[in-house]
Every structure is written in C-alpha cells, then in structure tokens.
Length: 216
Image (cartoon, rainbow, N blue to C red):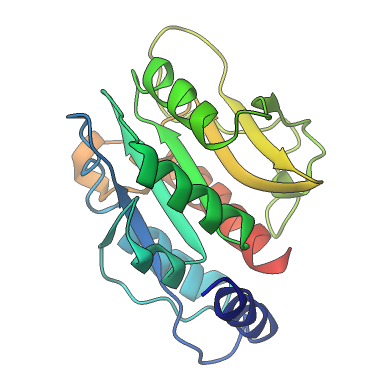
C-alpha cells in the first residue's frame, strides 16, 4: 500500500496541471469534536484551485476516517473542529503510516481545537514538536505571496494568526493554522459574511498549501 501511495503521489505531482482527477478529504475523528464543521470549505477550495492552479479536483465534500485504509487515496487531508479529539492506537498507527508514506495533514483550528489536537498528534509523532514556520517558508511563497505569514480571517482572542508544522526528516508532514480560521474563509460567502477581500486571502493561502503539497 505504501509503495502504491508513493507512486500515485508521483503521478499526481507530475500531472498537476493536466486532466488527472484529484481528491481532497475531511478527516473524521472520534472524541465528540465537530470534525464535520466548515461543510462548504473544501468544495470551494477545490473550485478555486481548479480555476487558478489549473488543477482538476472533484468538488465533493469527501470524508475519510482517521483509521481507515481509504486515507491513502487522498494526498491532502483536512482536519477541523472546535472540540475534543481522540485517536486510538489503530488511528495513531494508520495516520503515522499515511504521513510517512507521503500524505499531508492540514489542521485548521476552528477555535478551541488546540488543547485537544496537540496531545493527539504527539501520539502520532512522539519524537516531534510543532514548530512555527518562518514567513519565508515555501508554503507562504507559492503562487501567492504571504510575506507576513497566515492571513487573519477571524478574531477570537486578539492573538496573531500562526502557522505551525511537524517536520519529519526535513519534510513538512502536517501544517497547523492557529488563531486564523482559514477554513471559515473558504466557506460560502453568506455563512460568516466575511468580506470578499478576506475570503480571497483565505482561498489564496489555501491554494498555496495545495500547490506546496503537490509540488514537494
């Protein structure tokens, strides 16, 4: 499975701007947290990438369970929520295998996720710590330039938006946006009444993440 997944990533990366059908998925996890939040976010991000990066993503809001073998079908997996997160042993083993095989996890703190997700990701990579990515990291300098790091989409505690990462042997395997609410900015316009400018920044940063994932 691992070798097949790596091969599929190579094929996808080499045909980034062709007619290959790409997929992204939302991560379903246990613990009672609202993993299902931001329901229109991924379809809108996929549409934006198709229009601006010449990708060919499906526009469905697909869901994959953290412990499922199906996760290997998705080079990019999106995780969000406000509340509790619990990874059991099989979840931990499966997520680690997925990330080491070339998969990518994007964690989007929808406010309140931080205290739950950090210890669970520590189970997955006990040897790693989340580190704040510098503003010149390639994830901020893809098609769209964010030389001050993540755009601030929603205000909560008056803290700056921060982008953290788990880096395994030089490769960013997990990107974590904190105090940003990036996925909320991908939602349909009427849900949060964000300005067009704010939504555009969120979608552009999302496109940068996608371009980084498929180009590295």
